[in-house]
Image 1 (cartoon, rainbow, N blue to C red):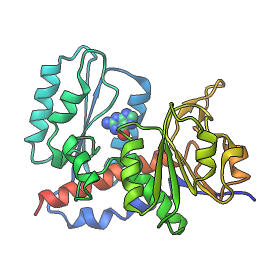
Image 2: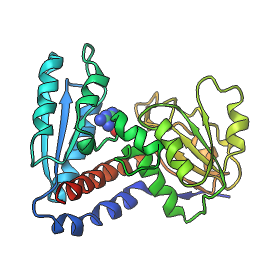
Image 3: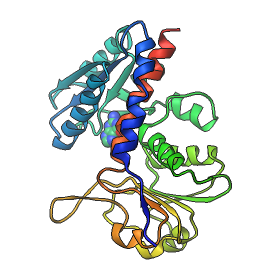
Image 4: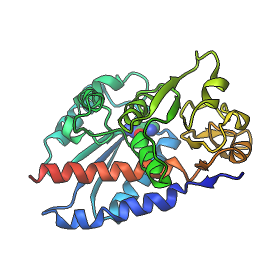
Length: 280
Ligand code: GUN
């Protein structure tokens, strides 16, 4: 068997194009502020991709780049100003922050209704209670990819490998909402091969190149690879051994071109949703 490829570039384009009529309905364009502190090159690329697509859709995008020496007080003052700015519906502070800046204090300062990353504890709590909330973009994008397979998720066994606040933990909440039976595996899991082998849906989000072996995959399973790791040759590689996994999986996402574009699409969808709520 050879897995069908879930093309995140194509699906992300469909998701963002579907935002255009919603944007056109609004009295003013949705506004997204992206704050980048320091000069981490990978972060600069992510931020450029996020703001570029926002601009293509006619959204107001404001990129604020601050030096790595920025004080926490100055960064908090910027967040306060964006919270109070009626032209801005979504605020994203790119992570990681330079040493000396307290990530939690900064993220907690973002108004929950403008927290388009879905990282604020208020949004985390609402997500787990199945209340309306801004949902973290990468796991939301994974749910959209799963939906596009057309495979019924009710009652199936899903495994999430990796327990980060950004991906793994909210992913568990979202898969539970899809009525999956969810296992959360992590670096201390004793029998990862066995646990992955029982799963109908595998979401790999550990950040370890090819940790999940193709031979572990249950025949026909859906494999979603959130990993973005550097290979020894400098190219990008996922958390799943792609070639061998395609021999067993029913569906699989490539790296790059799988989950990555979906993260940006869901960020823009979150921003449009925030603008719609602000306009009511
Ligand atoms: N750094 C890596 N991924 C993300 C993300 O989704 N949001 C933010 N703000 N920073 C990140």
